[in-house]
Length: 168
Image (cartoon, rainbow, N blue to C red; front, side, top):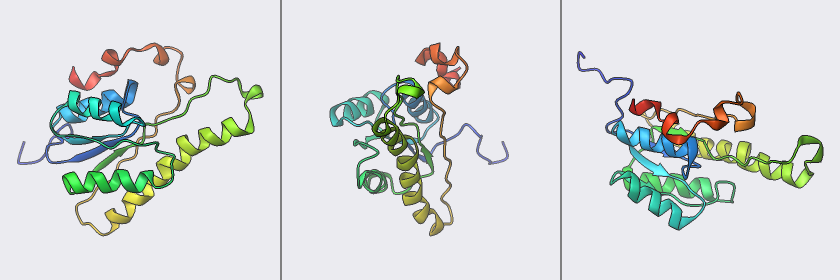
């Protein structure tokens, strides 16, 4: 292909995926890895993050922590840069979905959802964007999937193997 990279070629690229334990986050982490990327997988629980990283493969790094906790974004970026030296893509997938119906939602539940769903991706992206401005090669892609209840009803019923369209 004229020496150009394919849009599906991520060899030499580094991706961070938050909320990578299951569903779309796990599928994204596996897909990027299959396409050649090194992947930092963020899961709240350290043991789960390490287990997931081991199951995906050698170019995968566990970057555990609660994405909404103070200092988490800085630590995720620091660990990824320390291991891989760069970050090309951030998939902000972590989300806090509430089963509470809107009229019954408490202010505390609302604030917790905002911290995970909006503030945490903002902080992670902002933390990395500072580095991007200083780098001529850095690229930044942000993926903020809507909560499942915002998608068409069928989307919430798709199983992870069906979501892995990139491996087809």
